[in-house]
Structures are given as C-alpha cells and as structure tokens.
Image (cartoon, rainbow, N blue to C red; front, top):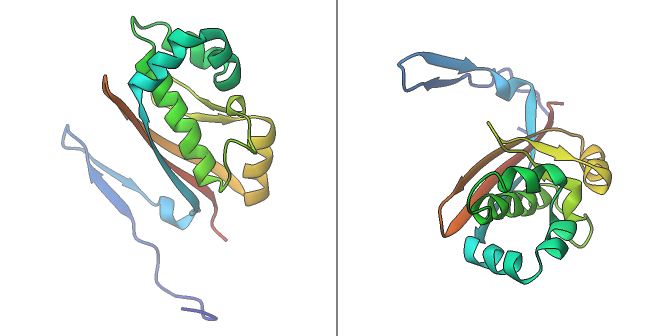
Length: 156
C-alpha cells in the first residue's frame, strides 16, 4: 500500500525441527531483503583450474582460510567450487560482479554453518546498500556446487 502505513504485523515464521521442537522467529519485523543471489558451479571446472595453475587460482580467488579449509579434504575441489559459487551469489545479491569486486574480498567460511565475511570493496558495497547481514546456504556433490544468498538490511 503506497503512502499508507499498514497496521498488519509481519508474520511470525514457525518451523518444526526434526526432533519435533518448534522454532519461532520474528525476523521479518526487523530485517528487509536487499538482494538475492544464486550460483551453480561445475566441480570439474574447478578441478581443472586446480590442476592447471593452483597457485594462480588460489591468489585470484580464495582467502587463506578458504584454501586451508578445502584442503583438509582428500578432494578440495568440491569445497572450493562451493566457495566460488558462494562468492558469485554474494556479488549478485550486492548487484555487482567480479569485475568490480575482487574474489578475495568475499570469504565463505567452512567448518560449521557457513558464514560470509566481506573485505575491502565488497564491504564498501554492502555498506552503501545498508546490508548488515548475509544469509547463505550451500550444497554440493561430486559434480556441482550450488549456493543461495540473501542480503539483508535493518527494516525501515
């Protein structure tokens, strides 16, 4: 409704967990979506880049934390593909591309629920858009890595 404030309260989100307990979150009342991003990366492509020029690929695309995390596994290409897809998805959610933000200015953590850390130009872009939180979900197989991202700001 344009020009009028709605008296309706935002819905409360309810989710039943696998153990039967109910989780309730009223997150819609305090956060607003700024942008969405999704990306699908071919793990075989990442594997080829790792074989061709591992050090160059590392310097261009990954933080030390991402590289070390992925190399804890016998085949790091799945995790690196997931981080690569995550960076693409984050950039899409910030309405920019890799030509304007260096890959290493977006970091996707591992070893638990994934988180997004922004540095340099990525951090500046998020601040300009008012982004205060980025939610991320990752899934990957031997063949593909897919990431979905939601960038949020405080509800105004």
